[in-house]
Length: 164
Image 1 (cartoon, rainbow, N blue to C red):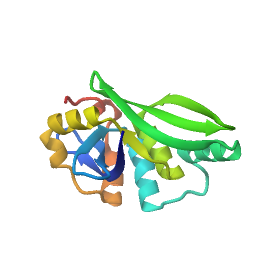
Image 2 (tube, rainbow, N blue to C red):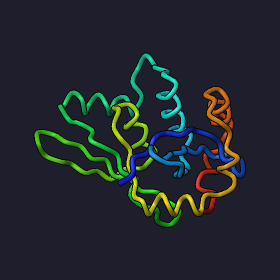
Image 3 (cartoon, rainbow, N blue to C red):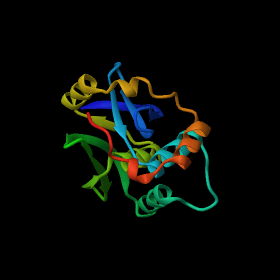
């Protein structure tokens, strides 16, 4: 397994979709994952330290896990099927390991909040690096205000309109 860090958030210039860029912790390869506007906003808010008076969904889930004594061990970006990434969340409760299927974007937002590591496979990172579209290379650097404004202007029907 390869540990990943958040390299940045940006907008894919070919279709104005938010993209989270995950970079291998001990290398240069990047795993781009196209995400929805609300997940991009949740990730951006956590990165920039923005807090709301009332908990948002990922904050609520974090608090439920903490109150129940559940530890988020790790997030695993497991595969790419039909242009869709899949993830697993690994939890531990009273010595028992619990594995949940989850969207990568939600998994990343939760991992950031709970300071949990994010992993993927060597094969997935290799294949993503080979097929990474040129538009990701043109992705704007993360700027919370630019991302927030772009997300406000986006049409939800535009998501999923990309090819790898």
